[in-house]
Image 1 (cartoon, rainbow, N blue to C red):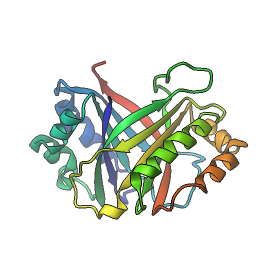
Image 2: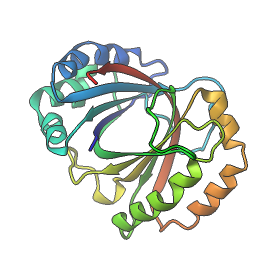
Image 3: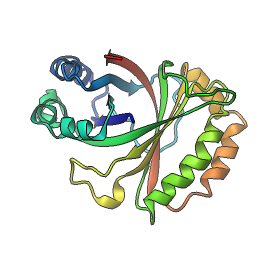
Image 4: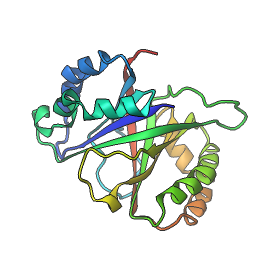
Length: 233
């Protein structure tokens, strides 16, 4: 089972290069020295003809740290070095509005006519998060994972469909009802491919399926460019 630690950082700075520089320095050196870290990826907002969903500013940077077990991921996220280098806002040397830290079980879905999910290599990730409150988070996740990914997999040009299922762990004092219910990520070669997919006849089918979801708080959609920083696989 792959567990993903996501550190999501928001800042109002237009070009938060200090975030990237910080991650590429001590945090990356620290993470690459942890034997049980499988990979580290960095997401930054895509530029160009970015689709707008009017659901708030994109994170300035997302870091994904993949590990092979929940206990190892929890231990890393709770460690003093992780908290100091990655979760402490003061470490970044610039204004930080918020850092969210989430642990998810990663679920990859096969695409049509494929026996197994393909590796995630295309660099454009459309990152979606669903937040509470909802009456029954487990039922929401069950319905979503059974119904939505098969539709997403029919997008023209789709390279990957992933869902992220939250673990029963929190490092912050977020209000319970406002926490992530489920994460979703669809991957494309580039921004043009994402826009063509969103203009296709698959989108109305997705929207119709979305109207069957149980009531929830809100969701966010952000086109992000993803870069692999480290792997030991």
